Length: 180
Image 1 (cartoon, rainbow, N blue to C red):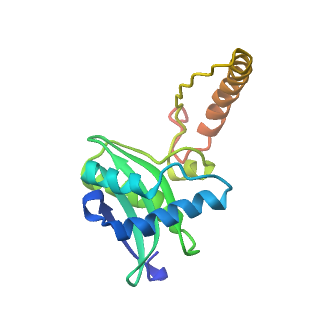
Image 2 (image 1 turned 60 degrees about the horizontal axis):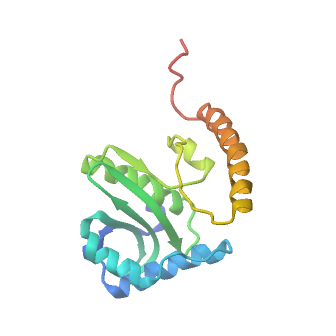
Image 3 (image 1 turned 135 degrees about the vertical axis):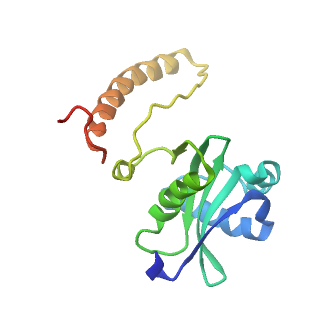
């Protein structure tokens, strides 16, 4: 990152004005658009969230001169940093990993946080020491036929995900505790 000339920083919600949120939100939207998805949150959500959450909302940012060119939006509580949204306007090798993982790890160490949950998906997280962890979602489905179809799928998916978690655990960059 040093060779890229970008200046990296962390900004908390109470340090981000509406103009900067417009840039961060554009980057957030562009990431969704790139993958054919719709962003869940409008600009106003982030402005209000930063006002309400203050230091519990943070954004790892990269500046090229005075221009904000990339951002990773995170949330925190007393013990954990939660990574959630990423966006960029430049193609710089390693920038995604720097803002989404390495800056977060450093932040956790500096602030005494016990855990960093960098978000869902991505086998590339294994090489960076992030272990796969099960998550839980709850939905109510009104249509009985659709409910049965989802239940059947989830039964198969749960078994497949448990197998996948066991298989991927063997690829973590940690020493095997049972090896001699």
